[in-house]
Length: 125
Image (cartoon, rainbow, N blue to C red; front, side):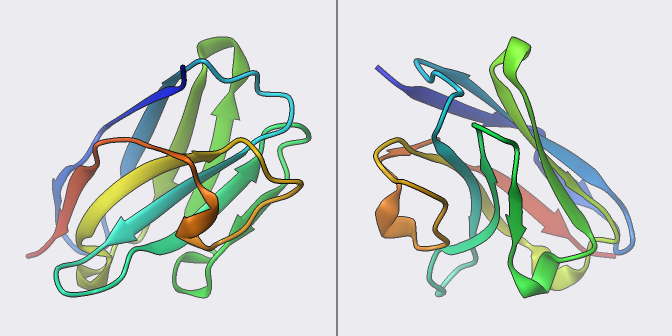
């Protein structure tokens, strides 16, 4: 059974950095898509950064491109999201997700069959 658990959220000032971690169990890291999503109050859940575990290919949504970096540590069964130059509009609950039955990565949340519980990120002065 696949389980995901996020950590690393918190409060930070604009321009600051945070690193989120998604500890996983039950994944093979041989051909799944791992994604970071976020959801602000009153808004839809949005895919922001994806990584294909087979070859570490990465994909980013435009709002975070150049500021966020997704990575994986297969030995530690963990996926990370390094968030730099944070802005107030990055404030949201951040979720880690796994899509285990797809041939490649998608930004659509409907493609992901496992989710973590979420971690709050607040960017404010």
